[in-house]
Image (cartoon, rainbow, N blue to C red; front, side, top):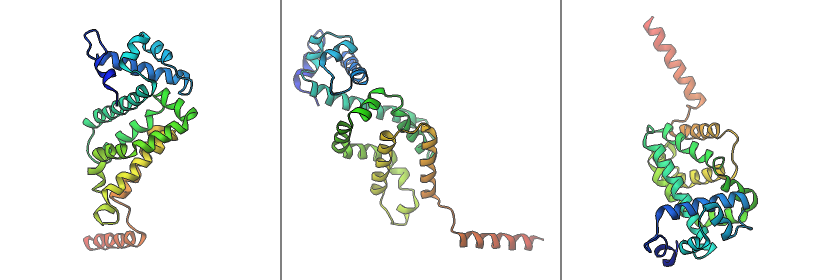
Length: 221
């Protein structure tokens, strides 16, 4: 992501200080939320991060490098958040619901993302196109075992990879088109998953089951 200059010249001993680097990236996120991307200057980042411009340039010699590392930083932070949430989540639909809740809440809790979606859609779309394979791989690591249990996969109608691709696109749409009720949206998407796992019986099957149940009750009488 960064060049050797950014990774070897920060900190008092000549080695990068992870806390200073994180502080700069947090400051960059706040600067984007305040100024937007088009007007963002390195002086804005140093001001929001509370570091000198000299320190900023030792870690990130260019604006482009800073933005690349910021994207990677935010992606890893989000994935870590989801991993921690899933660590205590039960298996099955509840596990998916927890992850989808975090995805749906993400934009509302991240003013820089809101600003970019509203004012810099070309940047967001370019990033999503470039990073889609990595985003899909991350979603697969989290959800492939769950999606492998669905009825379409078991019947050979769709593959697990195809459903991972579909779910990744759904989660991206949840970020781009945020819902005022993110938990409600997560419940709705989880309900779709539940239908894939155990769809309701067809009307004819329900009628046969009702007749069979009625006959069993009659025999017990």
